[in-house]
Image: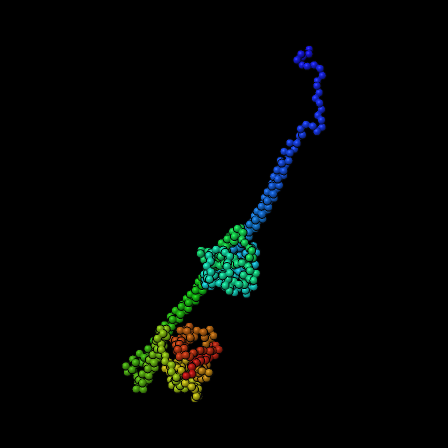
Length: 480
C-alpha cells in the first residue's frame, strides 16, 4: 500500500554544475604551507642542536681522554716518586712530565741546597747544561727584587728575570710560569717553564699541576729527610769508628802505662837500693880503707845521678802534658855544645869494644837552640845509642843544609823494626818490647826529646833498616 504522504512520480534531478562556477576549495592548502615551513625550521634547528651536542660530546670525550691520560701519568709519576729517596731522580721525573705533558719550550727545576743558602738548578730541558747550571738563585726568596706569593703558581713578570733568567726566557718572547714545590711552609724547590706567549692554562691542566706540585714537594721533603738522616748516620758511624779507635788507643795507653809504672818502679828502686846499700856500708864502716869507702860513695853518687835523671824525665813529661815546659832558644855555637857534651858522653857506660866517634873540628855556624835543653837531648840520644849497641860504634856527624844543620847519631846497635818505628816517639813506647827489661829505661826519653826539639823550631827523626842493622837519629836545628 502506497504511502499517502510520500509524493509519487519521478524525482527531480539537480542541474549539473558548470565548470568554473561555484566556490573554489583553496583554504586547506594555504593552511598546510605554514605548518610545513615551521616543521622544516624545527628540523633544521634540531639538526643544529644535535650537531652542537655531538661536538660538545666530542669535546667532552677529548677532554675526558686528556684528563684520563693526565691522571694515568700522575698516578705513574706518584708511584715513581714514592719509590725513590733521591732528590735528583725526583727532579728528573718531574721535569720530564712538565716538558712532555705541557709542551713547554724550555724548563729548569731548582732545589734548596747549600744548607738552605741558595736554590741550585738540578736539571733543565731546552737549554745546554752550561746554560741552565749557571742559573743559581738566592734563598729563601729567589726573586728578592719582586714581591711574589712564593707558594703560588703564577706567570712571572719581566722584572723577575734580572740578569739570571734571560737564557730561560730566550729570544722568542716566551712567558715564564713559576711552579713552587712547598711543604710545611718551606719552599723546597720550584720549576720555571718557558711557554708560548699565547699559551693559557686550562682548568684541568692547573688541577694536574697542583697534584704534581704536592707529590713533588712531599718527595723532595722525604729526599731531604733521607739525605739528612744518611748524613747523620754517616756522621754517627764515623764517630763510632773514632770512638772505637780512641778506646783502643786508651786501652793500649792504659796497658802501656801499667807496664810503665811497673818498669819505672823497678828503675827507681834499683838506684835507690844502690844508694841506700852503699850508704849503709859506709855508715857501718864495712870497708877496708879510704879508697874502698870513696868507691862506695862514688857508686852511691852515680846511682843518685841516675835516679835524678829518671825523676827529671817524669817531671819533664808532666810539664809537657800540662803545657808548662819552657825553652829559651838563643844563638849558640854547635861546636861548643859538642865540646861540652863529649866528656859526659865519654863517661857513659858501654859494652867493651864499642867506640864513640866524634866529628873532626868543623867551622859550623851558630844554631838557634836552648843550650841546656839541647844538651839534654843530645846526651839522651847518645846514652840510648851506647846502651843499645853491643858491638861496633856510635858516631856523631853533622850535615849542613840551606837554613838548617842536622846532627846525626849513628849506631851499629840492635836497630828498630819497621812496625816499632812508627810508635817509637810515643809515650811509654819502650815498654812494648822486651828490650826494656834487658836494657832498662822508662821509654820517655825520645818523647821528651821530640817535644823539646819541636819547641826550639827543630825536629828529630829515626831511620833503621830493621832489627840488628843499627839506627840513625837525625836532629835538625835552625841556623841562627
